[in-house]
Amino acid sequence: MYVGSMVDARVRKELIDYLFVLYDHVRADLKGLLHELDLTDAQAAALWRLSDEQEMTARQLADRLHCDASTASSMIDRLERHGVVRRVPHPTDRRAKILRLTPRGCELRDQLVRYTTERSPFAGLAPSDQRRLHALLSQSAAGR
Image 1: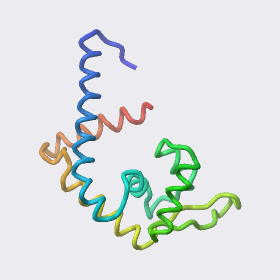
Image 2: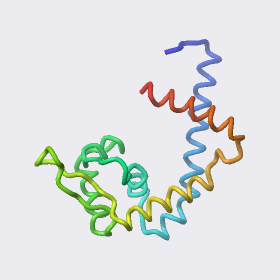
Image 3: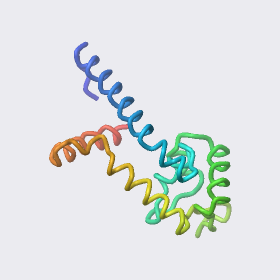
């Protein structure tokens, strides 16, 4: 990890400030859509992370959402009651269940992703800048 001067510390602090500003913009943009779709912020976060391409257990989802297993389980129960997700037996672990998006869940997730990416705070950046920022953020996230 690079350790720099006070100027570097100030820049890192400002980067975190910008992340909070961007997060607030995305949440504000999503507020109306989530109300329309009858989803909470937490349910939207779960949908965002669930994919029809990658199987995930409830424990893995809890880890990705940075919440405890009981909180994730309650949220999954609500999503299941709304017909968005279903639990299916894990192929090798009898105790675990795999979370699968239902067709309705896939539609909601696609709508959420489309809505968010169309209004992305990065849309005003040149494609080359978006790719460069993607590489930098990916590198930072991988270092965690």
